[in-house]
Image (cartoon, rainbow, N blue to C red; front, side, top):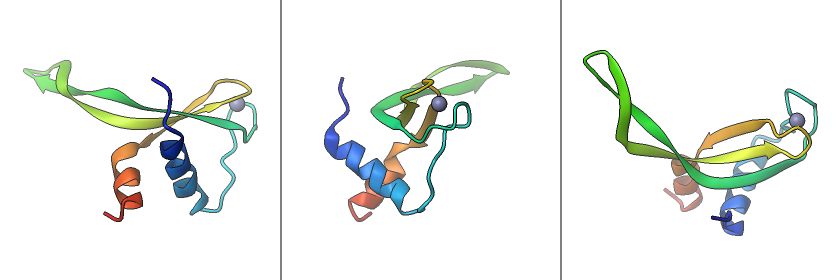
Amino acid sequence: MATDPKDSIVLREHLNKFQRQIGCPVCGSGDWGVHGPVAIPILDREDGQLSLGMQAMPIMVLRCKVCSFLRQFAWEPIRDKAKGG
Ligand SMILES: [Zn+2]
C-alpha cells in the first residue's frame, strides 16, 4: 500500500520541528523517502519464550534514497500530535 501523501507531510513537519538535517549514517545523504505506515509485531514473552503477539506498533519508515538505510519513527504519537492530541 502506498504512503498517503498527507502522512508523509505530517512526518516531514514533525521532523522539521527539530530543525536538524537528518543525515544518513551510512552514506551521508540527506535524501529520504517516506514509507508507511507499516506495522512491526510486538513480541509476547511467555515462559521465557518469545512469540509473535497479536499486537503491532505502527511506524513510519525513512529510506535513504542513495543506500537504502532505514530509520523508523513511532507513528501514533506523531499522528496524534498533528491532530491536536
Ligand atoms: Zn544512505
